Amino acid sequence: MKEKFYVTTPIYYTNGQPHIGHAYTTVACDVLARWNRLQKKETFFLTGTDEHGAKIQKKAQEEGKDPQEFVDEIAEVFENLWKKDKLNISNDFFIRTTSSSHKAAVQKVLQTLFDNGSLYKGTYKGLYCTGCEQFKSENELVDGKCPDHGTLPEEMEEECYLMKMNRWQDLLIEKIQADEFQIRPERYKKEILSFLQSQKLEDVSISRKNLSWGIPLPFDKEHTTYVWIDAFLNYLTGLGWNGDVKNIPAMWPADLQVIGKDILRVHATIWLALLLNLEIELPKSFFVHGHILSGGRKMSKTLGNVIRVEDLLEKFGTDGTRYLLMSGGTFGEDLDLTMERMVEKYNADLANGLGNLVSRTIKLVGSNEFLKTKKIEIPKDLHGEPIKLFLNNFNLHGALECINDLVKAANKFIEENKPWELAKNNVEKFEEVMKKLVIDLYVISDLLIPFLPDTAEKIKTALETKKVEPLFQRVK
Image (tube, rainbow, N blue to C red; front, side):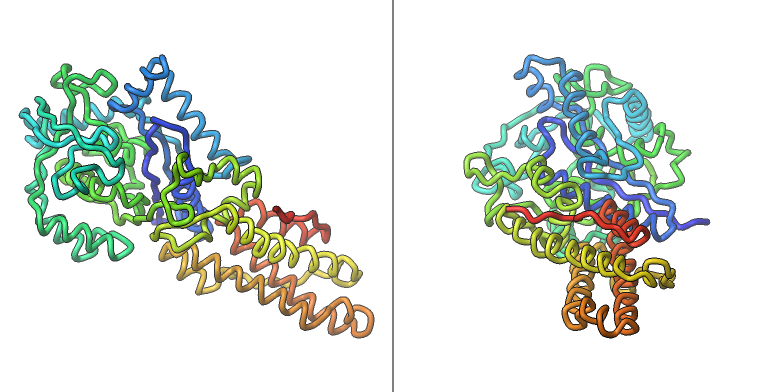
C-alpha cells in the first residue's frame, strides 16, 4: 500500500478577516504537503473555515447581516488568499462547517454519542469566555482574566448536554507519554501531561440552549451544537466522511495536525476524548507553533505594529512572502517579525542572494555556445539527507537555512573562480566551473519546490532556455 500523509490546519474562525497568523500556519502546512507529494506519498491537505457560534451571530448582527451571508463573505476572502496568485496554497479541499454535508455528518455523530451513552443532559456552571467560546477553569486565568483576550469571563449556568471526559484521562496520559500520540515540540507535550496529571478532566458542555446559529442536536431541537465539537469534526468530514463510525475514510488518521499553542489544550482533551467516545483512532501527531509578534509585542492596531498579509504580498510577491514567513524563526517558537527586518532579509537572501546567483549563472551559460547546446547530466536524487531530515521533522526554518547556505556557497564559488575571466583565457576551466553551477542551481531549484514553487519553476525554465528574467527585485 502506498505511504500516505494527511495534514490539517486548524479551521479558521470567521468572525474576522484572515491575518498573518492564518497565513503562517497555512503556508507551513502547504510546504509539508508539497514536500510529501515530492516523496511520492499519497497526500491530502485540508484547511477551511469554522462558521458557527455565538461570536459569529453577534458579529453578523452588529453588521446588520444574516449570519450565513456574513460567513459566506469571510470564507470567500480566506479562499481567495489561498489562490495561486496570492499565497499559492495547494490544499486538496476547503471545508466549511455550514455545508449541508458537514452538518448532516455532525448530527449523525451526535446521535451516535447520545446512543452509546457518551452524552447526558445536565447543567454546566462555570466561567465562560465569549472570545474563546469556552468555559475556563480558575487556573487558566491570569489575574482573573482570560490570558488570550484580557477580559473577565462571565459566570454562566445553563442547561446543556455534556460529554463524558474523565474516563479517558489515564489513557490519554498513557498514549502521550509513550508517544503513541505525539505532541511536538517536546515542551508542549510536557505542558499537556502536567495539566492532565494535576487536574481531573471535567465533562464538557457540547450544546447551547439559546443560540440559534449552530447545528441543532438531532435528539433535542432546543439545543444547538457547541462550536468546538462542530469544528473538530471537520478533520474527518473534510475527507468526505458522512458521520458513519463504521466507515472511516482511508486517509484517516491525520498524520499531522498543525495548531497554535492557544488551542492546544482543547485539541488535546476535547478533540481526543470525542474520538475515543466514538471509538475512532486518534491522529498521529500535533505540531504546535507559537504566536507571531512584532517588535517583541503582540500585534495590535493601537500599537500600530500590525503587519497585513496583503501588504507583504504587495511588497514581496507570493514567493517572497512565503519565504519570509517560513524563514522568520524556528517553527514551533514565537515568531518576531518587523517590516524593516523582512525588507533586509528579502534583499539579502532573495534579491542579492538567490536572484543574483540565478541571473549571473544563466547569463554566463548563455554566453558560451558549447554550454548552451550541451546537456549537462543532473544527479537523480537532488534531495540531500540534511534537507530530508529537516523536513521530515518539520524543521522548516532549518531546511531553508540549509538551502540558503547552498546559495551562499555557489555565489562564493563564482567570486573565487571569476568565470567571466575564465571565459576569455581558460575555456576548459570555464566550462567545468559553469557545469558545477548549473548542477547547483538544479539542486537548489528542486529543494525550493515546497517553499517557493513559482521560483523553482522559473529557475528550471531559465536553465532550459538559457534566458532569465529577474526573479527578485530589491525593495525599500
